[in-house]
Amino acid sequence: MVTLATENLDACGLSNSEEEAVTKTYAVHAVVDVKTKKRLSFREAIDQNIFEPDDGSYLNTATGEKLYVGDAIRKGLIKVTFIAFTHCLSASLYVSKRGAY
Image (tube, rainbow, N blue to C red; front, side):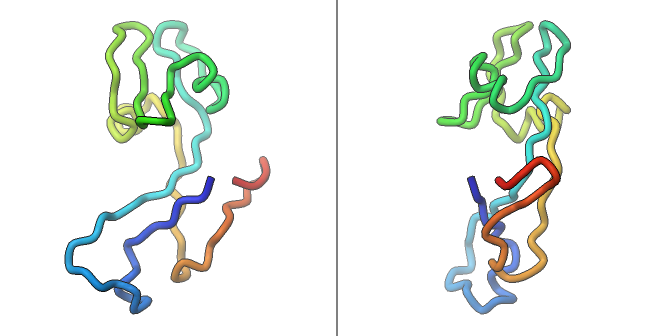
């Protein structure tokens, strides 16, 4: 999955609106299962219904509360690294030591 950051569209001359949504891209390293206190892979979290990719929600397994993914990241329940694209929309693939995303 590739997500493009739109913070620098003006600098690239691609912006045509004063109001644009800003998208941030993250690499997910782990998802915390609060009930078991274990770190799961992103795939394991999806398979165990802790993370729902369709609506971007995280399930706190101890309380049953659903959190927006941004809130779960801020609370440290989803371990991520922010990916900053330094060139105007030139990044089409994020590659790490673990493989391509």
